[in-house]
Length: 63
Image 1 (tube, rainbow, N blue to C red):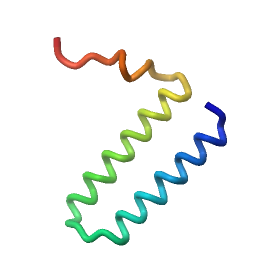
Image 2 (tube, rainbow, N blue to C red):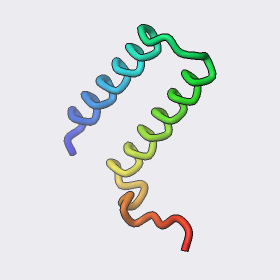
Image 3 (cartoon, helix red, strand yellow):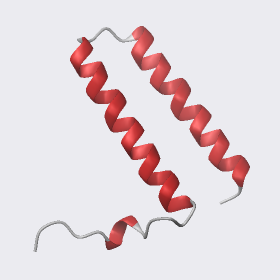
Image 4 (cartoon, rainbow, N blue to C red):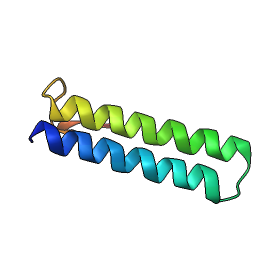
């Protein structure tokens, strides 16, 4: 994936998260959870894109 695509995705995700945080009224705890989930998902995606983590489909949970 070209670097420009990674930057565009990060900008789009950031703007969407800012819009949700700014214009959708919700409790502060829900905003914190939403922000944490989005940040964790983006970090995992970046690790996968840059090859520092294997494919998501190879991760097994449970038996």
